[in-house]
Length: 450
Image (cartoon, one colour):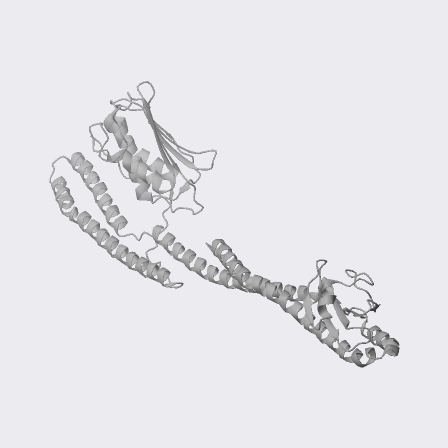
């Protein structure tokens, strides 16, 4: 935008100056020629006036020669005196050889003073001298092209300098205006980026032209409205999760009434896990969006695999867990990462025959990303299966794989799924690494049992 504004200003200023300076250059040329002609005319009239008395007497020719010689100095127009008998006193013009009378001279001898431009260039001024012995004499002042337009180049250079200066001033003003517009636009875009990143406290400063001020004001109103809507949604989600505590409390009371202590302990443990899940939902609903999420992928994967291990053993499954001990920090909240891994492992336990082995692997890719793979050796997914919400085609809601997909993509990673009847199903999530070290992962919750 700034460059285009400079180009537009330069083009507009150049066109205006061209329309203004071209007539001025022609005017200065004409003015220089008129001035030189006026000076030459005055010179010719003075010489004619001075030589009139001398030419009236035939013996005063020497005086006439001295007078003509005195006015012919260097860098001045050439002054000649053409006597009635055709004799030329002073330098003879190049276009008029000696002893040759031209039509212009004949016209001047009739008593007319005039100026004309010969075909060879320049300009000539002819003034008659009446009363000369031997016929009317003519004073002829000749101007060359250089003398006629003396000083024109200097005027043109001054005009060119003024034009260049005006263009530079216009470009400077356009650059300052463009910098102001571009700066205001970039700051407005920066505010929009902060809002998109979840910082709902970001506000734009109304500046620049009225249109940008209007956009800044509307953006601030939008940010305020988004904050209000999100706050209402978080509170609604927290309220809905809080309502689950009543039936959970009833389940705990029912578990305490069981006569079998082992059965009562198992159900109580499951109810406690459910209560912690409800608390996690409430905390997540009330967590500000601008908090930068982070978690250790390897630690969470080990914890969740350990959580599901008792159920896998009950189903006769062989479980392989490969997760390095070093930290694999990823920009995902721990509860979101837990939900994604639970969804992947839960799909294996729910949609593959009992006894089907599966493995959970965490590694670092060659590109430096953290990669999580959950693979099983089952019969594979049906051809109509989809990882999109509500369109799984596998007899379920389709939420599990969609949760995993959105968790990876929202963090800037990727989701990949491959399935066939011979090698089973493999789901891979990749996450960009973050430099922030996550807090210690919470211990695994006790797994369900039969």
